[in-house]
Length: 334
Image (cartoon, rainbow, N blue to C red; front, side, top):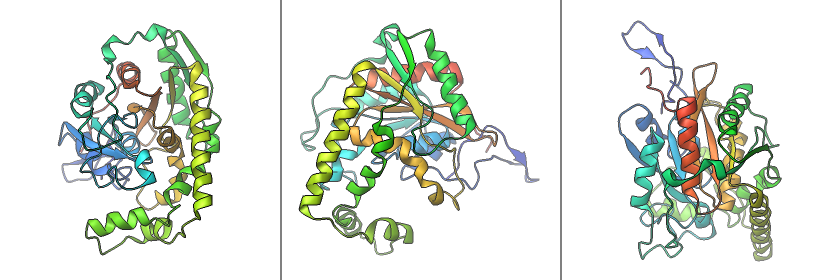
């Protein structure tokens, strides 16, 4: 997997090797993001349970959107609607080089398929009809769990500046649950002793299990039914606190990860950087990502644009503006 870098260095082979060589593509949709970033495909689809649309889009320098939970059917995907409690965390969404392609694609895949029982026949708004001047925006540069790189902070601030004169209001504000809920996602993921993951592996005929998957998920013990009930209560309390925060805002701008694309050797050691995305799986809110800058190493840095439930049109409208103001996808050097 190759992260889409802005510059390269010659190696004598006639091919310019970009700075993303040897870097992670960002997650379980990393291959999809990498081929789109490299120009090998105009469009692909990702699944996002903890960030696997948004992290690859950030690492590879493209655009992507995790729709509202219940917007797009999961029918036929490996993490379908029948995996148990974790199904509520997983959404399917498009990934492309340009926000415009997300806008064109989302209406095609959204809507009731009469198989996924969680999908709601909710109208999908038109991003071109969104009046930015009516939007109340918030932004934060640090989730209180892991401080991002200085360049990430600067890029979030640049995006906020680009929006300041176009929206009704802009405040630096962070939902408290962005920090408090970071451990809850993992507790939910392993609450049944990762039996849901074992079922997926068995259905796929997988016999070789990577040591990381085994260590992080498959060696966990299931909790009691009382403990699981308490986890669901905590989850609902997080969702309640988050929607209360959103009463005052229409959109939130924040980092996708504390770091740009990490080397394959260090990615797991820096996994806490994924804490920026998981809280928005717990809420189920629509969240777009667009490239907004570049690290000193020449690696892409994306931003999350989070909107209220069912307002993908707002997330995409703001993402489209940030893309135009700050550059978006850049042609890779390799």
